[in-house]
Image (cartoon, rainbow, N blue to C red; front, side, top):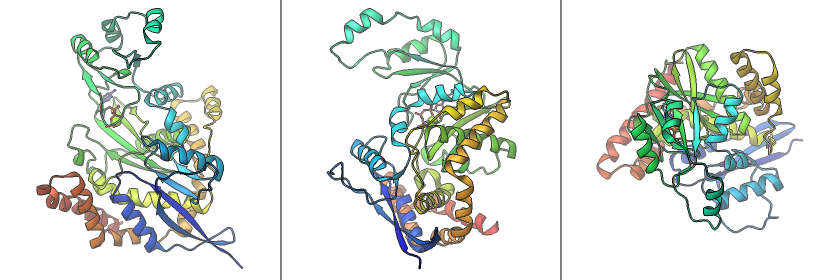
Length: 413
Ligand SMILES: Nc1ncnc2c1ncn2[C@@H]1O[C@H](COP(=O)(O)OP(=O)(O)OP(=O)(O)O)[C@@H](O)[C@H]1O
Ligand SMILES: [Mg+2]
């Protein structure tokens, strides 16, 4: 006699509107009842609410898809408690997410040999008040010549916060005069100066959810809704495999199940420039054609983690990566070896088997769902939340059309 067990998946959300509705609806329609380890496993999803809690209060979720930790601390601390005390699996690792900024991600990946452009950190131009500030700076802060640093890095370069996101405080710097004025205006930001990858021919974002990766061509200069480009063949198989191994290395190193890695291609080299993006943009208004992929990937990874009661890796454990670094290998071989640690940690083989056995009808259900009036209404709601009233209809049609393109292409394959 097998028992029926219901696994609960919590959605810890902020302003997200579109993907959760699609996720919930498709999961409901799938109505999964999976034979797993002698039991029948079913799934329920629920939105996590915000309220006071006792530190000893049990957590009712098996998995939480978290979209709040990077800025909403009550939820972050509840998640950390639940991982520690109740075996919750959450994506992403809340401790590394909290403590590891762009700076650490650059250092770690430089150490592993990834070609991150030359990057410097400079002390901030000004400071929030602190009782010990003056004495500390007087004693220890060295005068420095910004122009000299500029020459060492060479122009053009980017000045950007060491912990940045959403383009906040990012400036392109073309010469010594603009380096000086940009620094003068940088206020309390702690800044990086990074050599520009000038004249790149491709800009790619690699979105990862567990061991699933999607490469999208990206135009940073376009309007928000058009940054993800409709190009489908912009990398060859070799490049694809390199970019995926790079993203897997980064994501598994930090314990980020859901992350996006930006790389620029120039003269045969892919330079990663921004890859501490755990919990990246998931909106239909940004992802359009690629949005159904994201919803499906989320369903696959969350149900796998819930069904298998995947154990959360609380401590990152970097020793195996350093071991590979000691070996006599080419960069490409090393990258594969790092990625192999990722596949082991993310249990890629088991995951693929799970999808092949239990989620065979996911694509079909998703295809059907994205032809429904409910899906269109969900897109309209998201558009209405972001665009002025007179553009709501035209942009709803625009994103809807893109998703219908996705459906047509899926039917053809
Ligand atoms: N080294 C570089 N070479 C070329 N372009 C760069 C470099 N660094 C940053 N940029 C440009 O500046 C943009 C913003 O930089 P970055 O991605 O590091 O900051 P961010 O605040 O994390 O931005 P976002 O949230 O949009 O990803 C990039 O999308 C790219 O267009
Ligand atoms: Mg970026």
